[in-house]
Length: 328
Image (cartoon, rainbow, N blue to C red):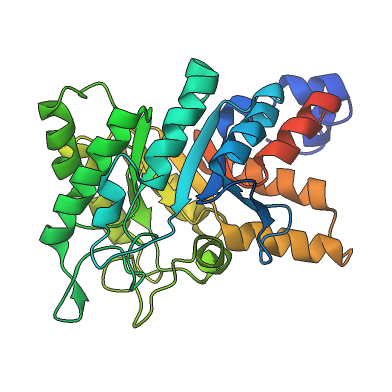
Protein backbone atom coordinates (compact mmCIF):
# COMPACT_ATOMS: atom_id res chain seq x y z
CA UNK A 1 0.00 0.00 0.00
CA UNK A 2 1.42 3.34 -1.06
CA UNK A 3 0.30 6.93 -0.68
CA UNK A 4 -1.20 8.71 -2.62
CA UNK A 5 -2.93 5.81 -4.43
CA UNK A 6 -3.94 4.32 -1.09
CA UNK A 7 -5.71 6.73 1.23
CA UNK A 8 -7.21 5.17 4.36
CA UNK A 9 -9.29 8.29 4.99
CA UNK A 10 -11.45 7.49 1.95
CA UNK A 11 -13.24 4.98 4.16
CA UNK A 12 -13.89 7.53 6.91
CA UNK A 13 -15.49 10.53 5.21
CA UNK A 14 -18.99 9.10 4.84
CA UNK A 15 -20.99 8.06 7.93
CA UNK A 16 -22.82 5.25 6.11
CA UNK A 17 -19.57 3.82 4.82
CA UNK A 18 -17.99 4.05 8.27
CA UNK A 19 -20.91 2.09 9.69
CA UNK A 20 -20.73 -0.42 6.85
CA UNK A 21 -17.18 -1.53 7.65
CA UNK A 22 -17.40 -1.53 11.44
CA UNK A 23 -16.28 -4.87 12.82
CA UNK A 24 -17.08 -4.37 16.52
CA UNK A 25 -20.53 -3.71 17.93
CA UNK A 26 -22.27 -3.36 21.27
CA UNK A 27 -25.86 -4.43 21.75
CA UNK A 28 -27.94 -4.63 24.91
CA UNK A 29 -27.77 -8.42 24.63
CA UNK A 30 -24.01 -8.13 25.23
CA UNK A 31 -24.51 -6.47 28.64
CA UNK A 32 -24.90 -8.11 32.04
CA UNK A 33 -26.03 -5.97 34.97
CA UNK A 34 -24.62 -6.70 38.47
CA UNK A 35 -27.15 -6.37 41.31
CA UNK A 36 -26.43 -6.30 45.06
CA UNK A 37 -29.21 -7.87 47.13
CA UNK A 38 -29.50 -7.24 50.85
CA UNK A 39 -31.75 -8.43 53.64
CA UNK A 40 -34.69 -6.33 54.78
CA UNK A 41 -37.70 -4.60 53.24
CA UNK A 42 -38.04 -1.39 51.27
CA UNK A 43 -34.30 -0.93 50.85
CA UNK A 44 -32.70 1.01 48.01
CA UNK A 45 -29.46 2.24 49.49
CA UNK A 46 -26.95 4.07 47.31
CA UNK A 47 -23.40 2.76 47.47
CA UNK A 48 -21.20 5.70 48.42
CA UNK A 49 -18.17 4.54 46.46
CA UNK A 50 -20.27 3.69 43.40
CA UNK A 51 -22.54 6.64 42.52
CA UNK A 52 -25.73 5.47 40.84
CA UNK A 53 -25.45 1.90 42.18
CA UNK A 54 -27.62 0.55 45.00
CA UNK A 55 -28.11 -2.26 47.46
CA UNK A 56 -31.65 -3.56 46.98
CA UNK A 57 -33.91 -5.60 49.19
CA UNK A 58 -35.47 -8.46 47.26
CA UNK A 59 -38.78 -6.78 46.41
CA UNK A 60 -36.99 -3.61 45.26
CA UNK A 61 -34.60 -5.71 43.17
CA UNK A 62 -37.65 -7.17 41.43
CA UNK A 63 -38.90 -3.64 40.73
CA UNK A 64 -35.51 -2.62 39.40
CA UNK A 65 -35.48 -5.65 37.10
CA UNK A 66 -38.65 -4.29 35.48
CA UNK A 67 -36.67 -1.23 34.41
CA UNK A 68 -33.90 -3.44 33.05
CA UNK A 69 -36.33 -5.53 30.99
CA UNK A 70 -38.06 -2.39 29.69
CA UNK A 71 -34.67 -1.23 28.41
CA UNK A 72 -33.87 -4.63 26.85
CA UNK A 73 -31.29 -5.72 29.42
CA UNK A 74 -31.81 -9.47 29.51
CA UNK A 75 -28.98 -10.72 31.75
CA UNK A 76 -28.09 -10.03 35.39
CA UNK A 77 -25.57 -11.35 37.90
CA UNK A 78 -26.49 -11.41 41.58
CA UNK A 79 -24.37 -10.76 44.69
CA UNK A 80 -25.76 -11.32 48.18
CA UNK A 81 -25.32 -9.32 51.36
CA UNK A 82 -26.60 -11.58 54.16
CA UNK A 83 -27.72 -10.44 57.60
CA UNK A 84 -25.65 -13.14 59.30
CA UNK A 85 -22.28 -14.68 58.44
CA UNK A 86 -20.33 -17.73 59.61
CA UNK A 87 -16.80 -19.12 59.43
CA UNK A 88 -17.16 -21.24 56.27
CA UNK A 89 -19.89 -19.67 54.14
CA UNK A 90 -22.20 -22.61 54.86
CA UNK A 91 -24.98 -20.11 55.50
CA UNK A 92 -25.17 -19.67 51.71
CA UNK A 93 -25.97 -23.37 51.25
CA UNK A 94 -29.60 -23.06 52.34
CA UNK A 95 -32.69 -22.30 50.30
CA UNK A 96 -33.51 -19.58 52.84
CA UNK A 97 -30.28 -17.72 52.01
CA UNK A 98 -30.54 -14.28 50.42
CA UNK A 99 -29.69 -15.12 46.79
CA UNK A 100 -31.77 -18.32 46.42
CA UNK A 101 -34.78 -16.36 47.72
CA UNK A 102 -34.03 -13.49 45.33
CA UNK A 103 -33.69 -15.82 42.34
CA UNK A 104 -37.01 -17.49 43.12
CA UNK A 105 -38.78 -14.12 43.29
CA UNK A 106 -37.18 -12.73 40.14
CA UNK A 107 -37.86 -15.92 38.18
CA UNK A 108 -41.50 -15.99 39.28
CA UNK A 109 -41.90 -12.46 37.95
CA UNK A 110 -39.86 -12.57 34.73
CA UNK A 111 -39.45 -16.25 33.79
CA UNK A 112 -37.23 -16.45 30.70
CA UNK A 113 -37.16 -12.67 30.12
CA UNK A 114 -34.13 -12.48 32.41
CA UNK A 115 -31.09 -14.74 32.35
CA UNK A 116 -29.89 -14.97 35.95
CA UNK A 117 -26.24 -15.67 36.67
CA UNK A 118 -25.54 -16.42 40.32
CA UNK A 119 -22.12 -15.53 41.65
CA UNK A 120 -20.74 -18.47 43.65
CA UNK A 121 -18.31 -17.53 46.40
CA UNK A 122 -18.00 -17.43 50.19
CA UNK A 123 -16.47 -13.99 50.79
CA UNK A 124 -19.85 -12.29 51.30
CA UNK A 125 -20.92 -15.03 53.72
CA UNK A 126 -17.86 -15.48 55.95
CA UNK A 127 -17.11 -13.44 59.06
CA UNK A 128 -13.46 -13.15 58.02
CA UNK A 129 -14.24 -12.04 54.46
CA UNK A 130 -12.07 -14.61 52.72
CA UNK A 131 -13.41 -16.80 49.92
CA UNK A 132 -13.31 -20.09 51.81
CA UNK A 133 -12.74 -22.03 55.00
CA UNK A 134 -9.76 -20.90 57.06
CA UNK A 135 -7.45 -23.63 58.39
CA UNK A 136 -4.13 -22.70 59.96
CA UNK A 137 -4.54 -19.06 58.93
CA UNK A 138 -5.00 -19.90 55.24
CA UNK A 139 -7.93 -20.57 52.94
CA UNK A 140 -8.13 -24.36 52.66
CA UNK A 141 -8.75 -25.28 49.05
CA UNK A 142 -10.39 -28.70 49.31
CA UNK A 143 -12.75 -28.03 52.21
CA UNK A 144 -13.87 -24.86 50.42
CA UNK A 145 -14.80 -26.93 47.36
CA UNK A 146 -17.47 -28.72 49.40
CA UNK A 147 -19.13 -25.45 50.37
CA UNK A 148 -18.95 -24.09 46.83
CA UNK A 149 -20.53 -27.26 45.44
CA UNK A 150 -23.36 -27.21 48.00
CA UNK A 151 -23.97 -23.51 47.40
CA UNK A 152 -24.10 -24.14 43.64
CA UNK A 153 -26.68 -26.90 44.00
CA UNK A 154 -28.95 -24.67 46.08
CA UNK A 155 -28.63 -21.85 43.52
CA UNK A 156 -29.46 -24.22 40.67
CA UNK A 157 -32.50 -25.54 42.56
CA UNK A 158 -33.70 -21.96 43.13
CA UNK A 159 -33.73 -21.35 39.37
CA UNK A 160 -30.35 -19.82 38.49
CA UNK A 161 -29.73 -20.02 34.76
CA UNK A 162 -25.94 -20.16 35.18
CA UNK A 163 -23.41 -20.35 38.00
CA UNK A 164 -20.29 -18.18 38.17
CA UNK A 165 -17.76 -19.40 40.75
CA UNK A 166 -15.49 -16.44 41.56
CA UNK A 167 -13.41 -17.91 44.40
CA UNK A 168 -10.34 -19.08 42.40
CA UNK A 169 -10.04 -22.40 44.25
CA UNK A 170 -8.35 -25.18 42.27
CA UNK A 171 -10.81 -27.84 41.10
CA UNK A 172 -14.01 -25.87 41.77
CA UNK A 173 -15.46 -26.29 38.27
CA UNK A 174 -15.14 -30.08 38.47
CA UNK A 175 -16.65 -30.17 41.97
CA UNK A 176 -19.61 -28.03 40.91
CA UNK A 177 -20.13 -29.93 37.64
CA UNK A 178 -20.22 -33.25 39.47
CA UNK A 179 -22.80 -32.21 42.08
CA UNK A 180 -25.00 -30.57 39.45
CA UNK A 181 -24.94 -33.59 37.15
CA UNK A 182 -25.61 -36.09 39.92
CA UNK A 183 -28.68 -34.08 40.96
CA UNK A 184 -30.14 -33.65 37.47
CA UNK A 185 -28.82 -30.19 36.63
CA UNK A 186 -26.60 -31.25 33.76
CA UNK A 187 -28.15 -28.49 31.62
CA UNK A 188 -27.05 -25.71 34.00
CA UNK A 189 -23.91 -24.04 32.59
CA UNK A 190 -20.89 -22.97 34.64
CA UNK A 191 -19.20 -19.62 33.95
CA UNK A 192 -16.11 -19.63 36.19
CA UNK A 193 -14.00 -16.58 36.81
CA UNK A 194 -11.11 -18.49 35.26
CA UNK A 195 -8.88 -15.42 35.19
CA UNK A 196 -9.31 -13.25 38.27
CA UNK A 197 -6.40 -11.06 39.23
CA UNK A 198 -5.60 -9.71 42.68
CA UNK A 199 -6.56 -6.14 41.88
CA UNK A 200 -6.88 -2.72 43.49
CA UNK A 201 -9.89 -2.13 41.23
CA UNK A 202 -12.16 -4.24 43.47
CA UNK A 203 -12.28 -1.68 46.29
CA UNK A 204 -15.77 -0.25 45.68
CA UNK A 205 -17.22 -3.76 45.25
CA UNK A 206 -15.88 -4.83 48.63
CA UNK A 207 -17.48 -1.74 50.13
CA UNK A 208 -20.77 -2.55 48.40
CA UNK A 209 -20.81 -6.21 49.40
CA UNK A 210 -19.16 -5.79 52.81
CA UNK A 211 -16.67 -8.47 51.79
CA UNK A 212 -13.22 -7.10 52.61
CA UNK A 213 -10.96 -9.69 54.31
CA UNK A 214 -10.50 -9.00 58.02
CA UNK A 215 -6.87 -10.08 57.85
CA UNK A 216 -4.22 -10.63 55.20
CA UNK A 217 -5.11 -10.50 51.51
CA UNK A 218 -6.20 -12.78 48.66
CA UNK A 219 -2.86 -13.13 46.92
CA UNK A 220 -2.62 -16.85 47.66
CA UNK A 221 -5.66 -17.59 45.47
CA UNK A 222 -6.24 -14.62 43.17
CA UNK A 223 -3.73 -14.22 40.35
CA UNK A 224 -0.59 -12.08 40.33
CA UNK A 225 -1.07 -9.19 37.90
CA UNK A 226 2.63 -9.40 37.02
CA UNK A 227 1.96 -12.79 35.42
CA UNK A 228 0.22 -13.36 32.10
CA UNK A 229 1.19 -16.93 31.22
CA UNK A 230 -0.64 -18.63 34.09
CA UNK A 231 -3.91 -17.27 32.70
CA UNK A 232 -3.53 -19.82 29.90
CA UNK A 233 -3.23 -22.68 32.37
CA UNK A 234 -6.16 -21.47 34.47
CA UNK A 235 -8.44 -21.37 31.44
CA UNK A 236 -7.20 -24.71 30.11
CA UNK A 237 -7.88 -26.40 33.46
CA UNK A 238 -11.37 -24.93 33.75
CA UNK A 239 -12.29 -25.96 30.20
CA UNK A 240 -11.13 -29.50 30.93
CA UNK A 241 -13.24 -29.54 34.09
CA UNK A 242 -16.39 -28.50 32.22
CA UNK A 243 -16.48 -24.69 31.98
CA UNK A 244 -18.98 -23.47 29.38
CA UNK A 245 -17.98 -19.80 29.29
CA UNK A 246 -15.08 -18.15 31.10
CA UNK A 247 -15.05 -14.81 32.91
CA UNK A 248 -12.01 -12.52 32.97
CA UNK A 249 -11.74 -9.92 35.72
CA UNK A 250 -10.87 -7.02 35.74
CA UNK A 251 -11.31 -5.94 32.12
CA UNK A 252 -9.79 -2.57 31.36
CA UNK A 253 -6.24 -3.21 32.57
CA UNK A 254 -6.30 -6.76 31.20
CA UNK A 255 -7.31 -6.33 27.56
CA UNK A 256 -4.12 -8.13 26.57
CA UNK A 257 -5.22 -11.16 28.61
CA UNK A 258 -8.67 -11.17 27.00
CA UNK A 259 -7.04 -11.06 23.57
CA UNK A 260 -4.55 -13.79 24.44
CA UNK A 261 -7.29 -16.13 25.74
CA UNK A 262 -9.53 -15.41 22.74
CA UNK A 263 -6.75 -16.33 20.34
CA UNK A 264 -5.78 -19.46 22.27
CA UNK A 265 -9.15 -21.06 23.08
CA UNK A 266 -12.42 -21.62 21.27
CA UNK A 267 -14.65 -20.63 24.18
CA UNK A 268 -16.93 -17.61 24.80
CA UNK A 269 -15.53 -14.90 27.09
CA UNK A 270 -17.32 -12.59 29.50
CA UNK A 271 -15.24 -9.66 30.71
CA UNK A 272 -16.05 -7.98 34.03
CA UNK A 273 -15.83 -4.17 33.83
CA UNK A 274 -15.32 -3.92 37.58
CA UNK A 275 -16.35 -1.47 40.29
CA UNK A 276 -13.10 0.51 40.39
CA UNK A 277 -13.23 1.04 36.64
CA UNK A 278 -16.82 2.24 36.98
CA UNK A 279 -16.08 4.60 39.88
CA UNK A 280 -13.10 6.16 38.10
CA UNK A 281 -15.32 7.13 35.18
CA UNK A 282 -18.00 8.50 37.49
CA UNK A 283 -15.48 10.53 39.52
CA UNK A 284 -13.67 11.96 36.50
CA UNK A 285 -16.89 12.87 34.70
CA UNK A 286 -18.31 14.52 37.81
CA UNK A 287 -15.31 16.84 37.76
CA UNK A 288 -15.72 17.44 34.02
CA UNK A 289 -12.36 15.85 33.24
CA UNK A 290 -13.93 13.54 30.67
CA UNK A 291 -17.19 13.08 28.79
CA UNK A 292 -18.97 10.33 30.70
CA UNK A 293 -20.98 8.61 27.99
CA UNK A 294 -18.20 8.89 25.39
CA UNK A 295 -15.71 7.40 27.83
CA UNK A 296 -18.07 4.57 28.74
CA UNK A 297 -18.54 3.57 25.12
CA UNK A 298 -14.84 3.84 24.35
CA UNK A 299 -14.08 1.51 27.28
CA UNK A 300 -16.78 -1.00 26.39
CA UNK A 301 -15.79 -1.06 22.73
CA UNK A 302 -12.18 -1.67 23.72
CA UNK A 303 -13.31 -4.65 25.78
CA UNK A 304 -15.36 -6.05 22.89
CA UNK A 305 -12.53 -5.34 20.44
CA UNK A 306 -10.10 -7.31 22.59
CA UNK A 307 -12.28 -10.40 22.17
CA UNK A 308 -15.00 -10.41 24.83
CA UNK A 309 -18.38 -11.77 23.76
CA UNK A 310 -20.23 -10.11 26.63
CA UNK A 311 -19.51 -7.64 29.42
CA UNK A 312 -20.58 -7.49 33.04
CA UNK A 313 -20.82 -3.75 33.64
CA UNK A 314 -22.44 -1.34 36.06
CA UNK A 315 -22.88 0.98 33.06
CA UNK A 316 -25.29 -1.46 31.39
CA UNK A 317 -28.53 0.43 32.03
CA UNK A 318 -27.25 3.86 31.02
CA UNK A 319 -25.74 2.32 27.89
CA UNK A 320 -29.04 0.58 27.06
CA UNK A 321 -30.97 3.84 27.48
CA UNK A 322 -28.47 5.70 25.32
CA UNK A 323 -28.62 3.07 22.57
CA UNK A 324 -32.40 3.28 22.56
CA UNK A 325 -32.37 7.04 22.03
CA UNK A 326 -29.26 7.63 19.93
CA UNK A 327 -27.52 6.41 16.80
CA UNK A 328 -23.83 5.95 17.57
